[in-house]
Structures are given as structure tokens and as C-alpha cells.
Length: 213
Image (cartoon, rainbow, N blue to C red; front, side, top):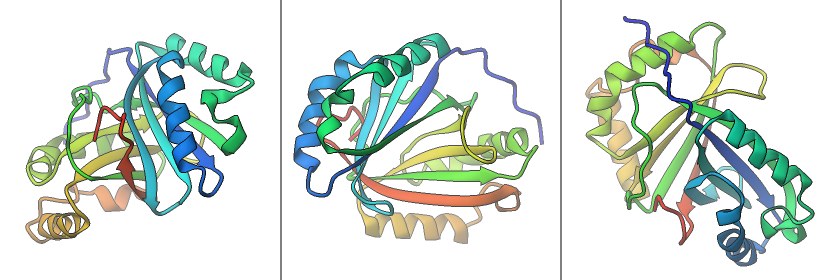
């Protein structure tokens, strides 16, 4: 299996997770719609959790480079009312990511009613091997359901990890497609499961103003 070529694209991404007070959802969504345009970067997607960790909002933004991301982070840290949501925030955390080098940038689209955000912890030293395996397997898997992208974590965490995001029209479709992919040998990528140390999944619905919905 070939070693993937390291990307020269300076684009980076940030996934911001807002844990919010119970039943504050509508107020938080309205505040985010008003405040995100001035928060820096380009909004890729915004989702509310429905399965997995609840009372969370996931915000994925794209930045031209690491300096732009750092400036936006500093702005957020210094804000007295971060993203207009201080009143309802329980916690806020952010992670920086780099798109797998063979993948295009996520573009605005209507891909499904459900988005699954999966985070995989990797055994040390297996990231390059994992990227190569995904590059080989993604075309056949992506033919079954929309694939937003896969992103290597650049900071935080106890181990190497990456984020992958998929879209589905319904939960029944998700179950059917995932079963079909395994049964036909399309998925998981060859050697993929042996590389994983941890897995976390969250099913979310796109917010009305999300470019991915």
C-alpha cells in the first residue's frame, strides 16, 4: 500500500463543540446564526446532536491557514459573550483538523437529514497507513452514501485520531447501507479495524443555516 503524499494545501478546519443548557436549543441556534459570520473562517456545517452526547452543537469551519484559525481562536477566547451563547453555555471546546490529502474541500450541499460524526482513535504510527487505506476504499463506499470528509486531528487528545463525517437520508438507510458495505467487503478499509484504538459516534441533524444540510 502506497504512503500518501503529504498535502501542501494550508487549509485547516476547526470543529467546535458547544455543550448547552437543556432546552436552550432554539435560543442557541438563533444566536449562532447571528454571530458565526463574524467569528472567522468559513462555515462548513452546523449540527445539533440527537444520538450520542446530547445537548451539543457541532460547528465545522474552514480556515485559509493555521494563522487564520489561531486568530479566530484568540478572538473567541477573549470574547465576553462567545458566539452569542454565553448565557446557555455549559462548556466549549475546539479541535483543529487537516483534511485527508486526497479529498476535496467539503462544499455546501443538501446531503441528508442525518449526519454522523465519527471520531476514531488510532494506534501510534498508523496514520499514514490509515490515510492510504481510506484513499483506496472511499470511492466504492462513497457510492453508497454521501461522504463529507475525513480529517486528521492536529491538537489535543491522548492519541492520534481522525474525524469522519457521513450523511444519510434516514436512520433506516444508514443501517441498510452500513450493513451492505460490510457484507460486500466494500467497508471497512483493509486493515482499518486493526489500526483503531477508540471509536466515538454522534448522530446529528443539520441546523437550518448550515451549508451542509
